[in-house]
Image (cartoon, rainbow over all chains, first blue to last red; front, side, top):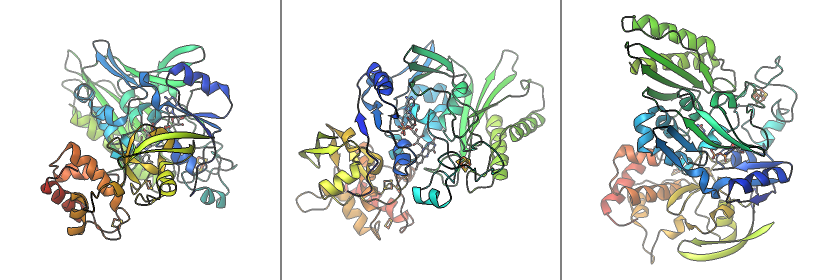
Length: 322
Length: 157
Ligand SMILES: Cc1cc2nc3c(=O)[nH]c(=O)nc-3n(C[C@H](O)[C@H](O)[C@H](O)COP(=O)(O)OP(=O)(O)OC[C@H]3O[C@@H](n4cnc5c(N)ncnc54)[C@H](O)[C@@H]3O)c2cc1C
Ligand code: SF4
Ligand code: FES
Ligand code: FES
């Protein structure tokens, strides 16, 4: 057999309770949804679970509901189904655009919302084969004791590169999490922390089950900077939502991915009033994003370029929404 | 730990004892000798390993064989019927959509899935559907022409 995966026990539960029990029954157990991030990392020796809990057979996680209470997307919904949902495309364009911009069409057939929110952070010194990393003495994120990106720092700067998180955060999304003590809910933004080696606030015995978004009349958009027009992770990705109030003022919400170890919600300036000058407003918005993001040498593309393109993209998307 | 996995492979029922960590591509190539699906990369990047699972394109190099229990798997070996190449295979041949051939099985299976849902795709639709299949030889123009020629032939893919 050629290049087999490391040995593990595969469990395929059909209910959430079964999955939760399996997750705590043995140490070193991992969840696998579409596997388009995890199995790649396992092939590279970055993950070596003893037990793999495959979430693919739990139908409860695969539903989308949209009504006057808002939108609820199950963690097991595939990116293909998410991108193809007409209701979401109508009311939450940023989500559809982000889902369509993830990886390639054949990944999106199986890749899920939950896996996209929880995918590992990325770095040119980490997403490499075992022999490549070994010959470079590994790094802080895995086995080594120095960071090749910021050798004087003491934390990993690997970039969170999921496209969906910012597109959900701009709508004030909440994430539902099931654990041994029941279901809790928190702001999606709080699922993350700025630490490339430990970027999720999720505990080992928890499962993301859904994302919830309140009803909105905001217009929205998502776009990303990448080298190729398909397949590539974002060097920087930006989601913007814009709500117009009764006075005609525009309220923006903006979040960025690919530049930090977590998706970053950028605080916006005061609303753009009906009689304000849009040019100076968007100039200020661009400066704000430029200051907020912090791309590092985690990819072969220069951090400065990523900073400038993230801010330019932000201003371009925001302007197109007015 | 091995388990019995039953699935339909190119129209034939099969049942094999396979380990939980067996990748679909290794199962196809090593257990069944179906070497059409290619390993073109480290995992998940190139599309050369694309096969169809229940009619939909799937990267067999990052798919666990055990997760395909009960499904219908199709590989490039299932395209030709009674010794006659499929419309897509003929089109790739006639339009120089294949050069070294390494990406071709994956291209043809992604295109098969496209033509089954959209029998007359335009250039953009073809580009989107084949967006995850990389080719280092043809420059893609001939591949798009091949898919169009196959669509014109109008056979059920
Ligand atoms: C070539 C290539 C290009 C890619 N390009 C992009 C891109 O442009 N943008 C992008 O965002 N991603 C990209 N990806 C990564 C990946 O395909 C997507 O992020 C995908 O959405 C991951 O989902 P999955 O279901 O396959 O996750 P999996 O691989 O199954 O899981 C990923 C992680 O999430 C955890 N997890 C999964 N589900 C849950 C859950 N319900 N609760 C808690 N934890 C969970 C797993 O334990 C694992 O750690 C790319 C991958 C490849 C191979
Ligand atoms: S940022 Fe540093 S520690 Fe983190 S993966 Fe890259 S090299 Fe390793
Ligand atoms: S072999 Fe390259 S994507 Fe599967
Ligand atoms: S024909 Fe050689 S890679 Fe496509």
